[in-house]
Length: 171
Image (cartoon, rainbow, N blue to C red; front, side, top):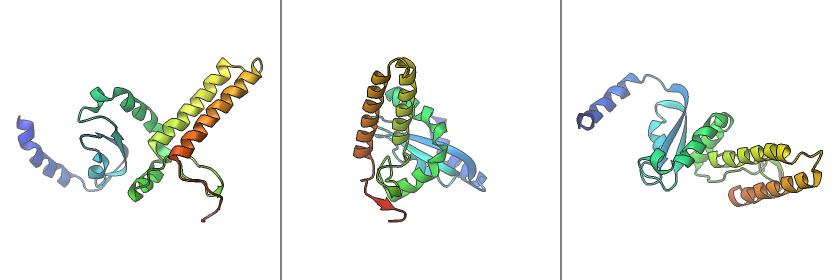
């Protein structure tokens, strides 16, 4: 009970302690039915904040959606490359998981944690398939497996990616 009474005073104290933004990456997690934009409130205090909204969850995300949270936390360390791109995209309100390529036709590296999970899953399944269906012994089965996986990735990119078109540079 005392915690709730002191929270405003604690918040003011903490604000006075911050002289500059902390130089760490932070994943701010909120439930869809609780605080969905948790990261926005933390951006004044951290240089690199990624905001994650767990669907169909309220205030107690670990209890309500443990698998979704575990998947996101597992993927977070690999997100270093795309964090700044994702921040730019979220600032503009874009909801694409995969951007269109700058040159040619198709999609580039994922720019959201969902796209990164799809790409990591695709890569992991390719590696598992190479062990389960050794190409030296089962070439036809392995090629069918890779084709099906690649078609599945293509479908996800088509549904969740920026509409592709031929591009050449800054078009």
